[in-house]
Image (cartoon, rainbow, N blue to C red; front, side, top):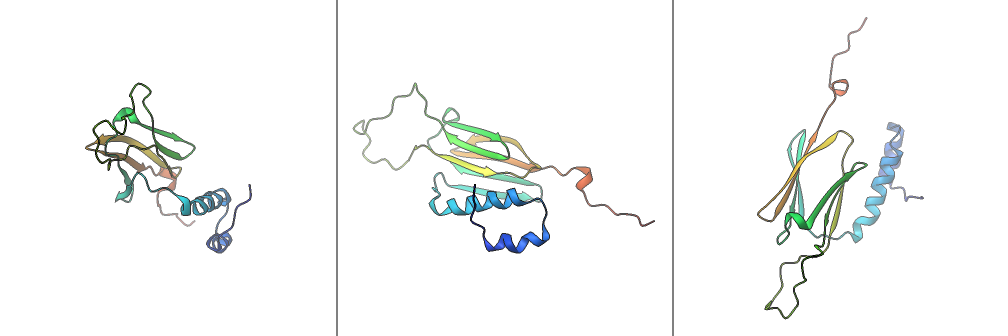
Length: 146
């Protein structure tokens, strides 16, 4: 696959080794960002240096309407249609429909050392807890000079 190369990556290449797939990944996201759908609205909250929360506003959705999947560093939150539930017809007493329960799929890229601690749907807000686990060999340490 051929990727458009953005200038920032060209500037970073002399200082990095082994990040080509990461640069390609971000190029892909930058190319698609212009056509990205903004539904559902969400926040990414930094709790501290090692913890984040993804908050998604999902008014009208229940636990059975949402599927969360994690694979290959991609966290995907997607709406699922319940086959047993009948769709509400337009003339079923709804005068104005302002709460959308439309299909959506949001994908977030997580770093290798970020784990998902859980997800909770409460009061129309889906909150996914994320934590960065730093292995001992990557923690800052002093190197003794012989």
